[in-house]
Image 1 (cartoon, rainbow, N blue to C red):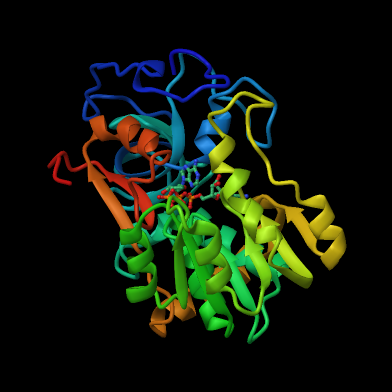
Image 2 (image 1 turned 180 degrees about the vertical axis):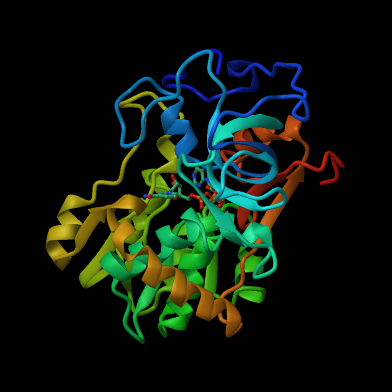
Length: 337
Ligand code: NDP
């Protein structure tokens, strides 16, 4: 990271890519150290928050230090009894191709014989747990209710909508293009999908929710949320998961919905949450999410880019909506789209 980024769009020049000689075969390992080769990098919107020096729920990145994020890596060399050469690990790792790491520091084993490695960064990773906990703890879906989800074609949103279908809801997705809306209906079984860039967005949304809205799972915040507040039913619930439309704005720049009057009118509960609020329930969540995968009820859609040099451009592309499903970068350097 070259500098902190405040109140503007993050860009490639905020980062520096450096080459450092590292001969892992020759390197000496202290007790518990391992050498990891990065295989899959998860690029996530929360990273934007950590690029700012402002206080947030996750610590700011330090200028001059390597970026870190949730990744899957393969062990190339080990001086740690827990890790064998060839094992795969998952956790917060630096964005470095090959590096030395303390094998006892916050990483866990993942097994590509059980599910593809991508799944550990998708349904069985942060996005799956966020969708699961947000829906279960705050959304509280009931059969016959209407669920609206924003950033619906993204990592969290696509899982939220599928959980809504499993629970018997009418599911309406909001996304930024007609192609994404088609994908939601055709591939994920959403009942309706609305393009927020269409001039008829407000009307389309009203038509898609003939019985009003019981749950609004908000990933986006800002002005696209405004018309949803007009449609809230009595005792609606709003899990506030994220506000990606505001992450690159200066404080005070964003146009927020004037929601309070509608929350009072409908006795709606609007509650922010962070996935780690419910960490104690992760075991239960992983079990149920895994069952849904096995039963064919939950599909993990991914967009995968290729090559170490694509990490930063892929992260930046989250803010223009390039991805459908969870956006991951594979370190295979084929550079195919
Ligand atoms: P996504 O895969 O959903 O990618 C981001 C998507 O957001 C884009 O594809 C784009 O889709 C949409 N988007 C980007 N900019 C805007 C904008 N200005 N207005 C409207 N939509 C926009 O990312 P994730 O699934 O990883 O994250 C989704 C949300 O969940 C984020 O807000 C993130 O911060 C939050 N989150 C919260 C967690 C928590 O613990 N509370 C944990 C994980 C994620 P489109 O083409 O439709 O515009």
